[in-house]
Image 1 (cartoon, helix red, strand yellow):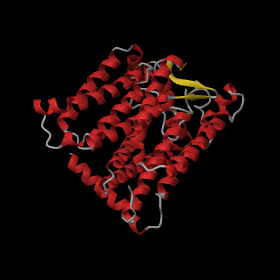
Image 2: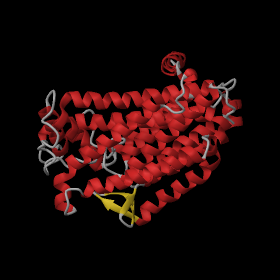
Image 3: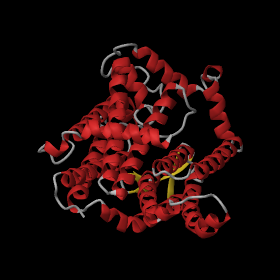
Image 4: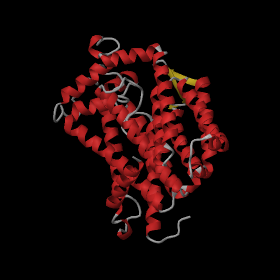
Amino acid sequence: MTTLLNRLFGSLTRQLNRPIARSNQKVDVALLWVTVLITAFSLLMIYSASIAYAAKEVGSQYGYLSKQSMFVAAAVAACILVFFLGKTRYYQKIMPFYFGGCFLLLMGVLILGRSINGATRWIHAGPINIQPTEFFKLAVILYLAGLFIRRAEMLEGFKLNRAWLKQYWAKLLLPMVILGACVGLIMLQPDFGSTVVIMVITVGMLFLTRFPLKVLAALFGMLAVGGTLAVMTSPYRMARIHGFLNPWEDPWGKGYQLTHSLMAIGRGGWLGEGLGASLEKRFYLPEAHTDFIFAVVAEEFGLLGLCLLVAAYVWIVVRAFSIGTQAQKLGFSFNGNVAYGIGIWIGIQSFFNLGVNLGMFPTKGLPLPLMSYGGSSVFMMLLTITMLLRIDYENRQKLRGFQVE
């Protein structure tokens, strides 16, 4: 399976990166433009989806649009600094400080956090709400990317026996305990959706770095059992499962959000009702400008708009894996691992959000990357794609014969 995956990524890399060595482009212009277009489209759709809520709650129909525009502007400024001020390898050096800061924020949210809809996931800081979990997802990627470089000797001549466990159990146990402690803090918020995303990122990065399948199978089994117990022992999670399995049984209760999401998507048809013509966003569909903005896009732009949006996400994920594979081949192991992690993060969170909107998964509070309203989410998404552009820039420099340390 790993060999097949490597061949697939290798083929994609050859096709997507063939002209790089001869091109004068220093960055991946296509990736940059796709990101810009999705972000601009998100501002348009946040305004459209939130116009009724903003007029009622903020007093201005431009309320949420103004805030999101400020978040995007701050993110762009941070992205410029990240791209030009440091090489990707520097992230490996600052990772312990960044990871420690995220851990403190996760602890702080339980003490000083602001509760919204029964969940304590935000720290109120003046006019903004900070969601530490979004920052921690990048910390997980950087942590694992560096861990795989430092622990590469574990995979050489691997045999799952007493001698191997005696030599490496501490090197495996400590990282898992650290990650487990952070995930435990996220579960206390509670934020089961983000926990699942982090677990998928972890398992996916372990798989792509050729971690032994026996260990992966054992880890996956433990996570599956733990996730099942977390759902079965939580009344509100079980209620979401029941609402997901048959939302029309209780359309005014547990199934309310999902039924209105499905009605919005169905009403959109092939070409949609037109920009601004959504009915569900007018106080029928909860969280229309955040977790369920995909349903509003479907209602206003139809199946054609959905396909174009999904195609953009698929292209970004494929490009991330391609950049990661190329970095690995050029000897930038840490860069490649980071690119893989970013691709998994964007891909799995987009997949889960779309699945929730379409009724494929139970309702959970996961934003659609680059699209949903939220400062922490859009800030971190733009920052991670900037890191991806930086990794690609270093790949291009190496291909042209420049010395890249």
